[in-house]
Length: 297
Image 1 (spheres, rainbow, N blue to C red):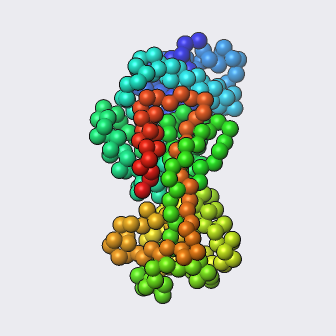
Image 2: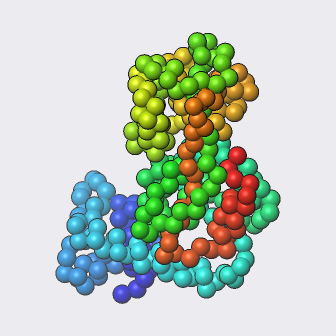
């Protein structure tokens, strides 16, 4: 069996199209069909269902072959990169995945500085939910993740960064807006704009409010911090957010950030990567920049 056949099969599963798989591998649609037939004969199993007028769909056996083949192809790609590239050369593409609140507000200065230092590098930053950052690391589509409240998992290494301060945020017209500090107790029964329950920062905020015995009235929940800020600006309620994420709004006076007088309160931040995968020189250089003592500020 040729590696090229496995790649063609994976492309067929991902695109659902014999013609698209052929284009990706510079072969004809007929050649893709012949390679599939050879695989099905080898394993004596139907691997793809050919549905008239619909995309080609893998069978259960096809999904198994696809999953294992992707691992083989990723390992081969990693091996080739290591063999072709000098170990300490900072070059190529760096794939970073992060959550919106960090990617939009904390990472850009570091990416800009890194590109000034290494203009030959292509940095791709993807903004996704935390669970997808972990999934990307495990399936090899992400080199480094930057997340809030990083979790320690068996195959994941966590490199702590500087924690982010949390502040109470309200609109300029809110009754608390004239204060500089506020105890969390004053938020009791206030309309509250929260992160979705699946967002790690939501768990931090819920824990703080519970520890302080402060019941709030959650009026709406979002997974995107920008939507939370717009809702607070519109007067839908107050919120508790990382201070770094509301600096532009406080300068523009569209939001007011109040320090918790019974704090300080923070959320942890960290870089995560696969334990069992050697970091490239490029990934190590970016990680060193993030942990150089500057911190995410």
